[in-house]
Amino acid sequence: MEITPSILTADFCRLGETVDEAIDSGINWLHMDVMDGNWVVNRTITFGPALIKSVRKRAGPEVFIDCHLMITNAEETWDQYVEAGVDMVIAHIEAVDDFPKLISNLHEAGKMVGCVLNPDTPTDDVMGILSDLDLVLVMSVVPGKGGQSFMPEVEQKVRDFRRAIDLQIDEGGKKTKLMIDGGIKDHNAAMVSEWGIDIAVVGSGLINSKGSISENLRSIAKSLEK
Ligand code: DX5
Ligand code: ZN
Image (tube, rainbow, N blue to C red; front, side, top):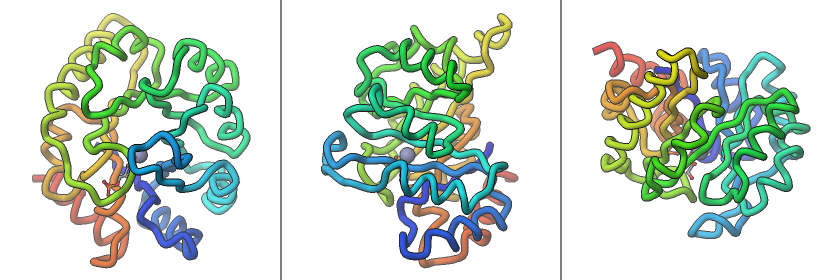
């Protein structure tokens, strides 16, 4: 299971060093949490395309960057994130009216697209577009901030997507990736990996005052080896 840091809990005045530290520790996928002060329940604003553009410049062309759009107007603004240099746009099924259109827009722009669903959104809301998605993201916290507690009740949703994706691949379909986001630490990373997760987003479990990113990454990697 791959680990990608959410930089949300980073000190934004030291963001360049945090990006360097993450890449030096072997990370090659960055998860950028975009919030517009409107869509998430606690009305938080984080950052937009301008900051992502700087992170792309610092990280270089090889690092994979996704943006997790927790915004009201992803269908109108997806191209700003493409222009800022992301490889993948992950949009909320709850916030997008015409997801197939968003998928074709992004694929035509040569980019990947993911669909993310909140803990209380049923998998059925996404199954109909699964075969066209590069990634499905199951939220294991209510979107809005880092450092929240993991919600184990999403297990069945993860297992349902795992089964559906494996079936899709067996039938020659897209190798859609399965991602989880929220509350992942070294005590539950192995569990979600066993559920069938391909990539786990880790924010406060990687970027915190307890240890360096590489120390925190090592402790998660060790928990996965058991
Ligand atoms: C929450 C974000 C998550 C969050 C993860 O709205 O989408 O990516 O930053 O942070 P932790 O791992 O601390 O829950
Ligand atoms: Zn996220």
